[in-house]
Structure formats: C-alpha cells, structure tokens
Amino acid sequence: MDPAFFKKAVSYVFNDRNAWPRFSGHKGMMNYAKNQGVSEKDALERQAVGCGWSAVPGKEFCMNDVIKINCVKVFEVAFQEMMLAYHDAAPTDKEKYAPSLERLYDIYRAHLKRAVKVIADCVEFYNRYQHITMPELVMNLQMYHTLEEGKNISQCAEIYTLCCDGVGLGTLADSFAAIEQRIVREKKLTFEELEETLRNNFAGDERTRLMLSQSERYCQGGDSWATNGRSGLPVISRKP
Image 1 (tube, rainbow, N blue to C red):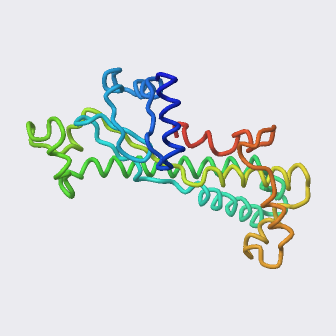
Image 2 (image 1 turned 180 degrees about the horizontal axis):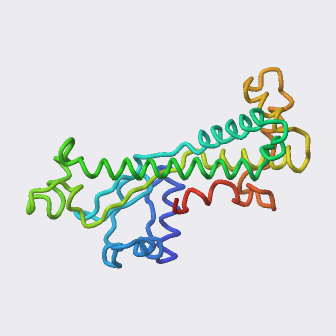
Image 3 (image 1 turned 90 degrees about the horizontal axis):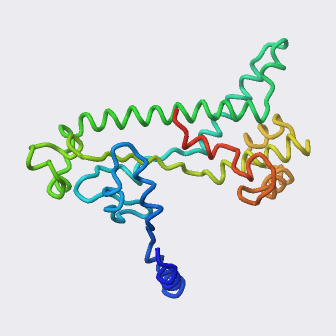
C-alpha cells in the first residue's frame, strides 16, 4: 500500500471520526491464499463485507460474525470443575487434584476444544440440510452455480469460510494473569478464598475485589503468564 495514501486515509479516520475508510493491504489479503483452495486471484478479489471481514463476490459462502465462543464462560466452567474435583477428592488424592494454574489451564483447554468440536459438528449439520430448511433465496441470485445448477449456495459455493469469534479474550487473559500474580507468585490469596469470594460475587470482600481489579493486564508487557499472551489466547487458533 502506498505510504502516502495510507497516511492520508488514516487522517480521514481521525478527522471525520467515522471509522472509515478501512484498509486491506496486499499482505493482509494474501494471508487468505494460505487457506486450502484459495488462489492468489481469489484472495485479491476479496471485498469488505462486515465489520472486519471480507468475501469473494459470487464465490464464497461465509458464516462470519455469527458464531461466538464465550471464553470467559469456558474459564468459569473450568475453574468450577477444578475446585469441585479437589473438594470431592479422597484425602489420599487431595495432592493429585490440588488446584493450580497449570491444572486450570489444562481443564480450560479441554473445554475449549470440546466447544470448538461441537461448533464444527453443528456447522457441518447446518450446511448439510440448509438447502432443505432455509435456502438462501436472496444470496442465491448473486452467486455463481446456483441458478445454473439449481442448487443452494451452501451446496455449490467455490469457497466456504467459517469464522468463530472468541468473546472475552482480554478478560480471559486478565483472569489468568490475576491468578498467577495474586495466588501463585505473591501468595496473597488462595484458590479456596478466590472460589468463596466469586461464589458470593465479592459481597463483603472489597479488598479482594480491588486487589484482583488492579492486577496485571494483558498486553502490559513483562513475563507474566498472561500479560505476554501465554494464556488461553493461542488455544483458540489451534486445531482441536
């Protein structure tokens, strides 16, 4: 992208305050060419469609800005499972099931992988039967192969794209960072105390609420477990 053009366009964003124009440079577009079945020509034909995504006109059937995983809820379920296993463990197994940052992360990853698998299965089911239950009557008029072959776009698209948004990634990383800082490193809090105050929604425990709210944050830099991105953020992009 021409640097002078880019600088001028950015100035419009700040001066007009309308979040427009948006930018899709050659390098960013070519990242799509890494996907199986997407050629360089297809990648460069992409047009802006939604708030932060694009599609190849007439060829691509997208499900973007539709499906989301609440990563914070996954974290909550993982934390509760870890603590429940510890409380239910026999006295001889307490050490085995003792809560820890690493154990929490492993349980979180398992739940997240399960969530991704369920979404993949649902999308496969959706695409298999959409032409029967809810055909794309308007979109079919704008796509290749649909009228020619008498099919729904879900059956004959040249490119299929699925985007699953990870909701609450920043809060997720901050939560891991707070646990690492306050429980693991500083030992100002225990997992049992955290469990209790969360169960009570911080009622009567303003000290803990303030301590957690002022803990390290994602992208602040440093070597903490979450502030440099080593928490759940990479997991969302890995294959199950």
